[in-house]
Image (cartoon, rainbow, N blue to C red; front, side, top):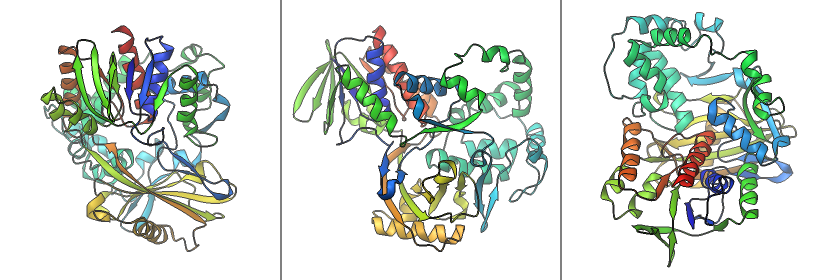
Length: 473
């Protein structure tokens, strides 16, 4: 039996790819909670409103993005895909809240040469800063420190810090640049500056840039081709993003995969036949284990290997409070994706997404307020009530967006330990963990957001890679 720990999108995807690759024997998925889908959770409210309590859109770019689109086609739900082109206001208008005002960030090349508040200079001036800055030989550093050194304090403070809040609800002064922006980090290490690295790379790849000839390599009927032709920025699914894990669930169950709910794994012992798992009060033998649970949950299960327990335990997670709120009619003055708040503003929210600016819902305005993350306890308290979280969210919405209407409906969710933090040294740590597993020939494969990226594309792709490894062992 092949065991998959975790019934989130990565666990379900791992089971899907195991079947697709013809891996034998049977596959069992063990989920500790009473539902599958993980953090992808679409809540259906009154009047048909949809509240996304987790991810809501997916980017179509790069190999991982193309892979997800292919998966959607294989699942026969391509007709449900709704793409948002780069020309759409929500793709162009992304805002930050600084010093009591909302500011739209530059989104085109000409705008880089014009001073736009809160920046004191055109963003193009950051390239001059980069050219003048001395190279610093490092193995890794925080993305805030890197950008501050090379591009200036304002870019680090007003662009990178809020961006990291949006990506992983984290503190940019702790998050690894080598992991999240590896190419920029390597530009400095290899060429002395970001600017020179960009120029050298552009010259070397001048014949590899996307062209009509490259476009012809894509199946004209594929979603990937459509996404490229229509220049999608992001996409989602009619009925909510949870349609994706639910459709994968139906597919794998139809092929014989067993889904064990409320099945908590408390120990993994490796033996000559694979791995013995303690699931509840039962012992289960597996040939291979694909773990998609957070690293900190996996760590204490591996009592035979203190090194793994220690290193996995050093990949932290943060808790995020999410408040979905609906208003009748249009209550917004901006047609935008939403806004993020730099940590230096010391507000209790990370940002707000204007959901219905991208995907309208029957004349309602639906907003998603993100709160907490790295600052959960310091700004919301140790164990805030749902009522307290809601009141704080509404207060911030009223203050920043000047909305006086009463909410039509709302939902409060506290997503405990939902987002891993890729702190400085993360890439090296994950590499050492995987090298240890390989060296000791352990029938254990790691997938999910703790290791290779937090996005939906990232975790699906990591699940596919884990399944491919399982297929050759």
